[in-house]
Structure formats: C-alpha cells, structure tokens
Amino acid sequence: MLREDFFVDDYRPTKRLLNFRFVLRTMGELCMVLFPFLIIALLISLYYPHDTGTKPLAITAGVDAAVGLLLIFIGRDRDRSNIGSREGVMAVTISWFLVSIIGMLPYLFGGFISSVSGAFFEAMAGFTTTGGTVLEEVEQVPRSILFWRASTQWLGGLGIIAFLVAFVPMSGQRATTIFNNEATGVVHQKFDPHIGTMAKWLIVIYMSFTILCTLLFWAGPMTLYDAVCHAFACVSTGGFSTHSQSLGYFDSRYVELVAMIFMTISAIKFALIYFAIVRRQPSRLLEDSETRWYLSLLLIVSLIGGVWLWYSGYHRGGQAVFKSFFTIVSLGTSTSFFSGDYSEWGSFFGLLVLATIFVAGCSGSTSGGLKVVRFVVLAKNLSKELLRRVHPNVVTTIRMGNMLITDKVIVQVTSFFFAYTSLIILATAMVSAEGYALTDSISCAISCISNSGAALGVFGPHGGFSSLSGVSKIFLSLLMVMGRLEIFTVLSLFHPSYWRS
Image (cartoon, rainbow, N blue to C red; front, side):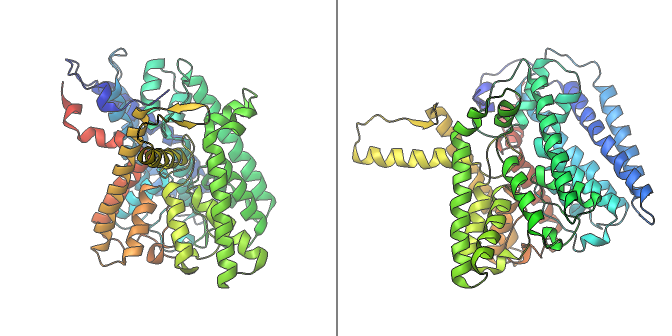
C-alpha cells in the first residue's frame, strides 16, 4: 500500500468537522498503555532497598491513570464512522507529546532532572528511541527510574500505537487510520482489514526478540536487571544504558556481539520478519531489495572504517575491524551503544558516523533516519537523470526489487529529503548560535532528527545534551518526534488546509 500524502487525500474541502472525541479517547487509551510499566517500575523501587524512585513513580502512575480515564470518559461517545486522515494525524501527533509529558514526571518529581525542558528532552528521547540524554551521571539515578527510562524506548520502538492496536479492541477503520500515521517508510504492506491481528503478531515477535536478547545478555557478565534494560534498548534500537560508559562498562566482546546481532535484526522491516517467521516465507526477507542494500551498506562502511582505524593507528588488526563493525552497526541501526569514544578516531571516521546516522536502517523497523529505501530511490533517480542528460528520449523506470517506483513516490521521497535536510540546517543554526562548533552542531541536529542519539564532540559518547539551553532542548525534542513520525504527520497540523471544515 502506497502511503498517500495527507494534502492529496484532503485537497477538496468538505463539510466534516474534526472528531475530537476520537482523538481524546485515543490519547486516553495510550496513557493506559503506559500504566503497567509505571507499576512494574514502582515494584522495582520497592524491591531494591534505598531506592528513591517510589514516590515519584507512584505519583506519576496516579496522574497517568487519572488523565487516561478522564480522556477515555470524555471520548466515550465518539462517532465511529466519522474518522479520517485528519483525526489520525491529530491523535498520533498529540499523543506522542502527551505520553512524553507524562513520561518526564518521574524525572521531575524525584529531582533527578531539575528543569522541565531537560526532563521533557529525556522522555522524548526515550519514546522516540533517540537515546540522547541530559543525565551526566547515569549511575546516580535509582534503578527503578532507569527501568522506566528503558521502558519508554521499548514502548516507542515499534510504536505506542502498535501496542494500542494490538491490545485494545477497535474497528478496522480506526486501527488503520492511526496505525498508518505512525508507520515509517515509503511503501507499506496492505494488512487491513486484519491490521489488529498483524499488530498482535508484530508485538509477539518484538517481545520474543526482547526475551531472547535478555537471556543471552544474562548468560554473559550482565545481571538480570542490566540484561532486561539493555535488551529493551537493543531491540528498540534506543540505546539507553544503565551505565555512563554504555556497553563499554562490561568490557565484553560477547555482549557487543549479541548486541550487534539484535540491533541488525531490529533495523530490518518487521513486516518481512513476520512473513519469514509466521507465514513461513523467508524468501521474502532474503529477496527484499531494501534489506540487501541495508546489509551491504553496513558491511562496506564497517570495512572502510576498520581499514581507517588500522591505518591511522587507533586500533590494530582484528580489533580495528571489530570496533568499526560494532560502532557502525550501532550507529547504522540508530541504537548508538558505544564501547569507545568514536569522536576521537579522526575526522574521516567522524564523517562515516554522520553519513551512517543520516541514513540509518530500513523502513517499517524500529530504526530511525532517512531510511535506506529513500536513499536507494534518490540514488537511482540521480542515475536516471544522468542517463536522460545523455539520452534525452530514453524511457527509464526505477525499481526496488520487483516493485516499480512511480513518479509520485519519487516526488514524495524528494520532498521528504528536502524537509529532512532543511530541518537539520535549522537545528544546526540554533545550536551553533549558542557557541558550539559547527561539526558538533551538525552532528547534534542529525542525531535528533534521525532518532540516533549519536553525535560528535561535546555531544559525543562521553558528552551529552545537558549543556544546551532550554529552548534548544525543546526544539530538539520537537525534531525527535518529527523524525519518528516521518515529518509530514507533524507538519500537517500546521498546514491551513488541515483546519478547513
């Protein structure tokens, strides 16, 4: 199913008013999705002695339940037939801001983050699986709060909407409307009218990967608590860790190898994994053009990085190759675990870092970034235009595997690329205006809109985003959710045609 542009769908003016009850009920139900994880975090705070997260988590759970039930009550008499793309856009966009506001409360109530802007940034970085942090000493934060922090990125991995569609009974029209506005990429499989069943299977696969990853981490040097939190971060490609040194804290190639495997899998389109496992059609995964491009790019960039590290003397032999593979896989999946400070490995490797987080993983995965499918379409369209320069009358087409990419899709991709790069330039200007170096500012901007969390210089692995002003943190938080919802879903709310009755 090709994802239609919002403005094309609603170009002709209609008499229909926005169904605000539908929007409010959806927001309320999403609040209730958070509640079990707040309770689990609360139980963890009671289990560990001297854990100071009990009170802030209890208050937050109460606020979450009250807000959720109130919104569900207000929206209880919604018109089920009066649901369109406008309701989907508003419900999804506002819900992401609402859950981030609730998600930041434990940080504020416990005093673990003193400013509202910083707490909102941390929560948004979790739900969007960006993984950037304003916490300078992660080990100083109670385990219960760190579990909640890890839970936010696990919920945001496949998308909080996916959990809602999977576990809350709703009509096919309603499920499709909100699910498609959170889905990523250019070309999607058509699942309705069974989209609820599909969402359940995706969640089952997602949970299975998480459990398996947890067990493998636990079999190594990690405690069960660390294994769960890092599995949440790994499978969601979020990157939050319970230690300031990330996976480098464990100093274990086994841990890094397990992480590489699950990061790589999680950045592949989950619909293909569904067909490979549930429908027993593994050939669809192996024959997918985007997956082959994705794996090829990871391999090529990792080898180039390994040669650079060896040639420049930063690491030797097999260690250079392994360090490069781990770093590029981590960044290319937008997870951003680290075991060393890659920002100190020379400007050339820094360039590889920026290119990797700019593109990132596949559409329909937990990964962020431009997505490999758009990169391939842009590259093939460039080749097509060069051919036309030499042979003006030639008729050519662009294909991704067996699928024909139409001119309409090419326009959508180029429009997305323009918006993506324009927002990066705007964010770079804002950050650099605070006095940061240009390279640091660019990496900060790309890090947030690509939902990577990886950056260079003062925002690098051993740095963080705490030194930014409150205004910049709020703007970068907005950038994160725009990147997670693929820009146009959020920008639609600011277009005049959206508000025409």
